[in-house]
Image (cartoon, rainbow, N blue to C red; front, side):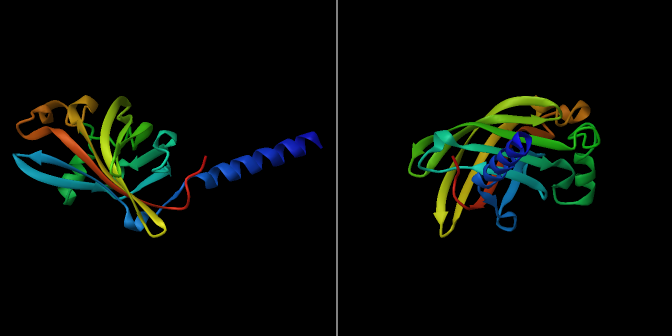
Length: 186
C-alpha cells in the first residue's frame, strides 16, 4: 500500500510539474541566426527544436527555460549549404545531433525588456551567453522575442580552413521568437 501511495504521489507531482511550464506554439515560433559570409549578411534557421519555458514577466527571477535544437534541421538557404553546415568542421551533426540552451537567470531591464543569461552547449562545448529579449502579452499568448550574440569559433563551428573569419565572420546572432500559451508555474 505504501508503494502504491508513493507511486501515485510521484505520478501526480510529475504530471502537475509537466503542466507548470507554458506550451510552445511551434507554428508561430521561430529560431534563426544571422552571420556574415564574404561580407554579405546571411540568415539561417532551425526547423526543429523543443522549448520548455516557464516565464512570468512580473517574476523574471523565477524563469526557467531549456531549448533543445535538432541541428540536422538547419537551413541556410540551400541544399549545398545545409549539407556543409552538418559536416564535422561545422556542427558535426553525426557526432553531436543536438544543441542545448539552458537559462540561468533573467533580469528585468524595464519597459518589457529583459536580460537573459544561460549556458549554450554546441559540439560538447558549453559557454555562458548573454542576450536581451522582450515579452509581450498578445491575447492568450505570451510572445518572447530576443537575440543572443555569440562567437562561432568558441564552439569550433567552422574548424580548419573555415576558421578564417574573412570568409565567414566569427560573430553570429541567434534570433528567436517563442510564442507561449498557458500560465507560468511555480
